[in-house]
Amino acid sequence: MRELLRRSTFLKPLQALALLYGLWQLTAWCVPAWPSAHDVFRVLGADLRDPGFQHALLGSARRMAIGYTLVMAIGIGGGMLLGRLPLIDQVLGSVAVALHAIPGAAWVPLSIIWFGMTEQAVIFTILLGAAGIVMVSTDTGIREVPPLITRAARTMGAFGLRYFWFVVVPAAIPKIVDGLRLAWAFGWRALMAGELLTSVSGLGQLLNQVAKAQQLDQLLAIMLLIAAVGIGVDALIFKRLEHAVRVRWGLAS
Amino acid sequence: MRVELQHVSKSFRHNGQTVEVLHDINLTVAPGEFVCLLGPTGCGKSTIVNLVAGLETPNAGTILVDGRPIAGPGPRRVVVFQDAALFPWLTVLGNVEFGLRMARVPKTERHTAAMAYIKLVHLSKFAHAYPHQLSGGMRQRAAIARALVMQPDILLMDEPFGALDAQTRAVLQEELLEIWRRTGCSILFVTHNIREATGLADRVYVISSRPGRIRHVEPISTPRPRHAENPSLVECQRKILGVLEEEIEKVMRDELGESIHIAHDQAGPNRLREMHS
Image (cartoon, rainbow over all chains, first blue to last red; front, side, top):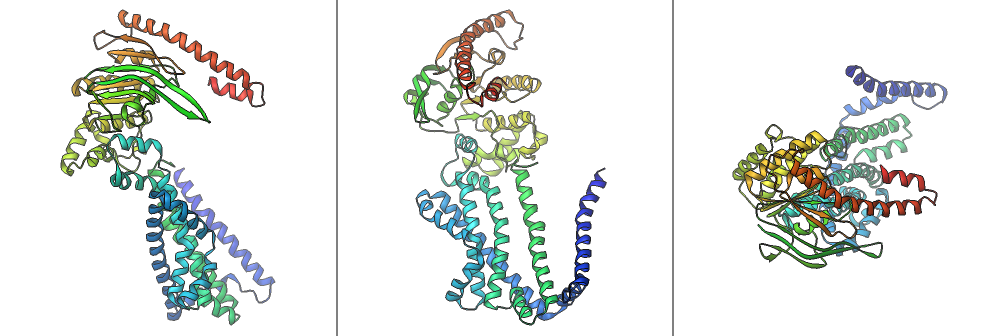
């Protein structure tokens, strides 16, 4: 029974994908100049073996890695500071909320004015597009420690910094992880917007190139890859992490 | 440790109104004594525990510990809460070590001490399990070990077995008495169960509701182990029940009055069902 269940959950998305692939092929026959799924995958396969393409892909990955590391550091650090200092929270908390209401792409012009058409501008875009959500969720997690946990900790002599480090921070981890997961999605979007507009060598800039050259099959291949990386990292890392944390913290079974 | 409450009153602000929860409470727990607070739900017995723990401050009166007024919570007066309140991110061992860690006890020392108390509550096999992997009774055992490892002078227990099934509760009551005998700490134990109170305590304070006052103090000298059918115990229970019945009538009058009032609006029938469930 268990085996059957596992198989069916594995098969269902596969069947759905096969269906999608078939439909795509059908539309390609009907609509002229629309590349078939087969063509697009073939192009993607060739792209992935191309050194220039690999260079662009690695460039995007590097910027995302640097940007996301900064997002984690500044988002979690800032959120903890906000959660700890109510006075600053009242002033900067609303700024953080406002920051995370602005889509990542909207930061690109400012980034270009400050950093020019550079790699730094792209990283800055990721930072501003994704740090706000981490800051807000960390802040919330820090301020919303369950009262019973606080009471128990107090009677066992937990005060001051030790209380913060051994009780407040671990209690906030589910919220922080929620924020990190969203920040990945926001950051990935911001990276693409940044690369599209700054023409720093990367996936976004390749999109620009192939669009100008009217290479529809190339365009679709790159977009497919962007979607795959976005979904893949979320499913392989963040979804698992979030689930593990929710189980451990008794929020899910 | 001797805990004394002298003329303690406590009120809370609720929806802009001041509600008196406790009125002129006088109560003593002698060193090594097992005292139960018994009363209907909402009579403020948990507030007494929070006051003694230092988690709340009284509006009037004083709380003395060994003759000195208390200044906030501290590990000499540890609380065991109804739903264990274990830290979900720590194993049983991590939870039991927590208080020692706060007190900066060196690692090997606190490990040894924690394992000893985990053994005392029969959880050795589950020392490395996380709270979400434990049953309700096991969680409560872990919470008791976590409190005892601090070697408190008084253990404050706020309906610790209230959420457990009858068998588990009976087993834990027996074990608690054994632990109490071995550690010699005082226990202030809150319950709304007469059998539990008379089965455990040296003295039972019966608390009335709204505001909470001490209605009756019943010393219980029946030697342990106690059997529920013991005539002197039955006599105690009968006396306490007499006091409580008046109280319960009062509560019922209050609640029924309220529900009849509510029954006039649309939401009436549902609210009534909730109250009696």
